[in-house]
Length: 383
Image (tube, rainbow, N blue to C red):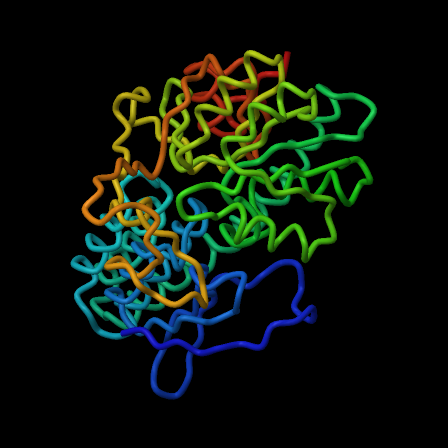
């Protein structure tokens, strides 16, 4: 079950937005989410008391973004265990809530494995619940640490590719603190450039149909005092043609073993534009987003979402008139094509940046070496 609680807005909250947290009130443990569907008009917290409520929050995009979905999935397993629900059933429901984002399954399985191991060792479900929560908290902390390392590696790569600073970065969707245990992935790189005085302009794609760029990235950029401008997705080509983009930085929801990148729909056209205009196209994501069990881009399951997200405009605090809960912008009965993601082939990706470093060129061998960790040696040098 989920309850909503309004927060007052203002400038008193830190830049690092608490998108998710675990609390233990007297009535029992809960998972508290910042409802991202209500931003930027209002900051509302969604309080989940069971895994079913979290599944709905994931499907509705109240909580979203690959790294944060992994954290949420782990906490969801811990919540089911602490509340006495069937942990295996909750884990399968959570894992299937969004099929493209591999981090969700990683987080769920990690917490479930900790629960099962403790249960097998002690025979005590309470010990299992404690172990699952510990695993979720460790994952949360690791993601925050990975975010900081990605930001450092990403900024170093930008400075190598674009010496002299004054970076004009184009980004798509939302990749900041709202999707992470820390300050994000691609957005964290831009934020580091801003803090170092080397960001000239952050170009923010609005990201149709759900406007994650307009609603969320602009929200985070404004709170961080960054120089940013919003553009419609179909204006990106004009921006490239005008010579106003120095680099494209995006996140990822799944990276296949061959380096194909699944990210929010609209990313692939940016990669094509970047290649034509000789602009670096850089993907920033944690190692957990690399799925070596998915051989190539064609093997990535791309989530298809409801057509009303395209035929209606979903805007907070606007009177609802459409059957999907938004304002209709197309004739009643219009069919819509609405993939949540598209896939960019590795030959269009300049580099993939993770907490372990940057890989360029993007090859299966380089990704496998990076995922093997420090024991396999340092990641290949960018060249």
